[in-house]
Length: 398
Image 1 (tube, rainbow, N blue to C red):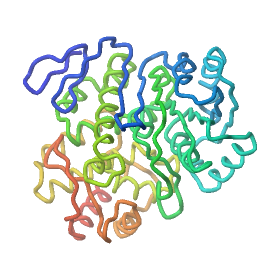
Image 2: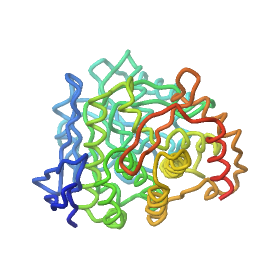
Image 3: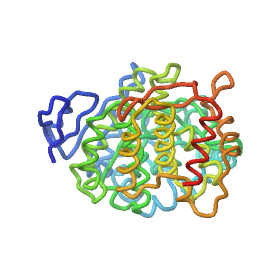
């Protein structure tokens, strides 16, 4: 597994290239990625035995050796015992709250009940919450931490590939409401992120593929060399190769950490690049009711393909790039069009209406991340309604 740099020279340690620079991994079984945000900086620890080390890693960031671990029923059965034992060995007192699994947990009702639960347990400004689970748990717990007592600390322990490479990093927290996905939330950075790739062995194949979509996104927006590496080694990652998984998770986290450090609150176009495919994706998820019929990563995969197709239609990128990108997703088993979701009567006007309620609307105009090629994404509002409708109709009829 030897990825190449932009100049054609091999990269060291079997690690992919990120933004034209080689990443050095002295110990290929683990990595630490810093997120540089001044006094709110934190580290992302990546490795195959991180969960068993969690107590020792968490203890230095605690104001008081007491945490409330919040997880869901599925993750609790798989990983809670390991975390609990690690915290016990580190002398950390633990309370635990277990929630139902699924996107439906990211709701106003569940938010209110969770706040009641932590207040009943008893919290202080020195209390730290620990989010053990995927993106749903991380987003919800992060939002609770942002608003409880006007802000308390929390730690992210993402157990899905999607959460490890995307939602656990960067401080975006929130819940879904009937008007759309993640429309209620806050920016609130974690104190620490612990990504144990061993947890990925417990994921269903579909969940793993959904997370892979967010990995490919980093290649699509500004790292063509990483996309090339994924074309060769994506199958290794999916089949469980630890070196490939650590390399891909580290490269993804470094890419996101760099962008977040440059534009933490998404006030410029830099962080908006991370929304590549998401304007389409959130509308698709909304139309399916944010349920299990379409996972977030699957929606992002479809959305990225649609973004490339729209870019090609507008003459911004070569149609061959759009086809190459879609082909790679399909080869890894990801959906590339809305009709991969059964039982939905898709409608272009309905999807446009759902996009109009998205938080990425600016001055009444939809914001899109389009591409001039693979690794050359940019933000624009210059998309004519007729071109958007045409792309949606093409995707629906494909």
